[in-house]
Length: 407
Image 1 (cartoon, rainbow, N blue to C red):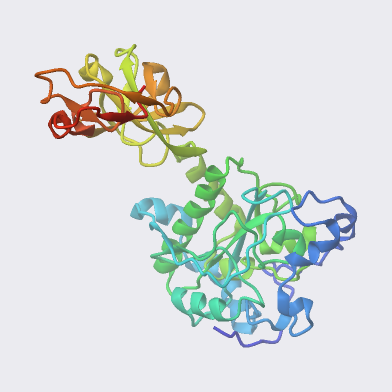
Image 2 (cartoon, rainbow, N blue to C red):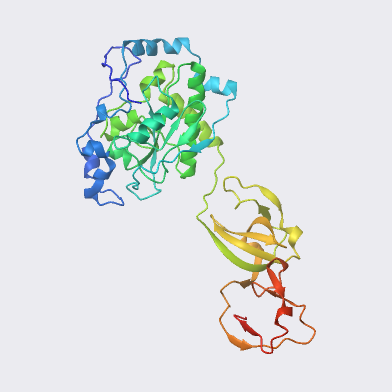
């Protein structure tokens, strides 16, 4: 939603931070490892700002500035609200599921180190006290040439609107070429704020784990993986926003407290491996080690993987391999008697037939032996009932049956 500009009021209150913008000249001189040439780093500047149609101060995003009432409430907040992190733990809030509303109209461009190679995250807040998460998404979807981010978070939702493998236009070109970025939607009650912070911290920790990045706040030194828009302004430049500092202070909350919560969730979060490849792989194998290996619903230690059995139950069975996947190890998806069983470490098997490895086209003539018309032929040269096609009875009337692609 379009935000109204408010006059900035500077007061000498301890809770109000006046943070100067530091020049980004050192970053402008560095050699960036980017999919575009260094001459093309303008891709990280929003299209309408590049073309002079708007400015960051008037782009419709995070334009709300603190007024006198906001500053006063920030000054008194610590005395009037309980500790947010303690409240979250006391209430035992669950976290929202990550939803997707991916927008096809958003431009796609990689980070400076390449597609799917972010260097950290930037934490924003919408600076709009009257909007909703869907209202923010709709507004951004219609005005993405001014700015767009990867996701929005509120008390009940985490909604991703752009794939995190691509960069976005959210915090100036120096941050845009480096970081995943997402927005916190404002709420009107302390309980709703606490619930939104719980989701906000969870999503931050989730992204760090997803991309195998350590937790390291950049708030005090300009180095690390966890940045606020305020820290980007202070250390990288290319932007002048200070969110989410002002909004946090209204609830007696701070970036330091948020970082504590992110770190707790990061440390508690299960570290899952990413599936690097997953391909169709047709083969047959014998079990050579039934004692060591278990069967999983997905490759082990990937998100959603559960143990579904042990290989010992299939020691004497003919194993058909359906797919091959790679994490830090290699995995086969197997079936027995036509039923898909699950995923097992490839080291558990000895392959005796792989489709395509020994097949070759031949032109041969074969005669059917008397009394063998009831024998079956198969889709592959393996006597496996699920791939049985038909009997040879249909060929008995032919004097010279022709068989192609016989092993």
